[in-house]
Amino acid sequence: MESITVGIDVSKDRLDVAVRPSGEAFAVERNAAGLEQLTIRLRELAPQVVALEATGGFETIAAAALAAARLPVVVVNPAQIRAFAKAIGQRAKTDPIDAATIAHFAEATKPEPRPLPDEATRLLGDLVARRRQIIEMIGAERQREQRVTVPHLRRSITRLLKALEKELASLNTDIGDAVRGSPAWREKENLLISVPGVGRVISSILIAELPELGQLGRREIAALAGLAPFTRQSGKWRGKSFIGGGRTAVRTALFMGAFVAKRHNPVLKAFFDRLVAAGKPKMVALIAVARKLLTILNAIIRDNRPWQTA
Image 1 (cartoon, helix red, strand yellow):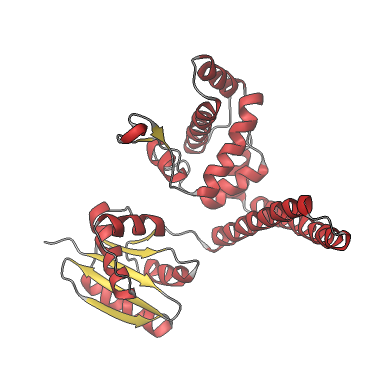
Image 2 (cartoon, rainbow, N blue to C red; image 1 turned 45 degrees about the vertical axis):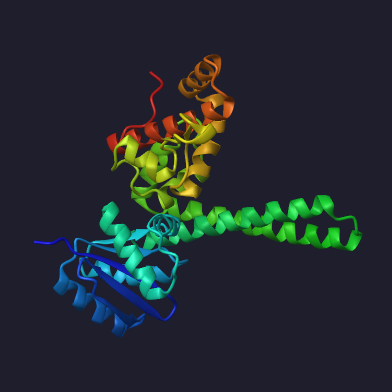
């Protein structure tokens, strides 16, 4: 029996659907009636995977409805879809064509459907994402502050910075309350922050953005975080390894942790110093520390055992 793969392009008002290998295509409205119609039709098809592209939140309700109908849903990275479309020479871009490309990508790569986060996890993810936005705004305003010479503009920036810092403090409190209000999250946070280099901010980001922590092998979890090395074999980059892709917020948090850990975590400090002594550039050594830190955290959550120095 042929394996059926479904790709869905999500827009504000409708869902364009493509089915492989049959080539069937149809569209439904992105509302309750359309989602009910879609789930009934997909249940009849019994697909191996239903892939939706992440589109700034529009996909959330559709993915939740399909998951509730026990369909094998996976939300895919838009950058991967664009790269795949370029690789297969798909230059035209319409919603039906995008749906067909998503289906083709899912058929070729066979992404593994994973359970969607529950409501509490989505809320924590939204709080963490908002915190990240506020930090970016604070950084932008501080850069402007360095360039501005007009006094009343500097005062405007100062007022805005104070408001943003107040909002950041409020979000930090909300995130802390959310984590400590959940016994499961509180236990996970206690395990994560037992590792020198990991504080409550980093643990909150990992809980919200990397729920697979402790459930996957070290290679798979490194790939999700964008810390799995890959090698270029062309031009002047022949033989050099790079990292990329994955979840940017997770990778940034792990770099923050690695920067602290290489000073204050005895195991990771020794690891960093050993790599530098062997001639590795400091940035390469820091990436290796971030990857090793992730491996340690993954094992700690998997085994439900806090950090032990010995």
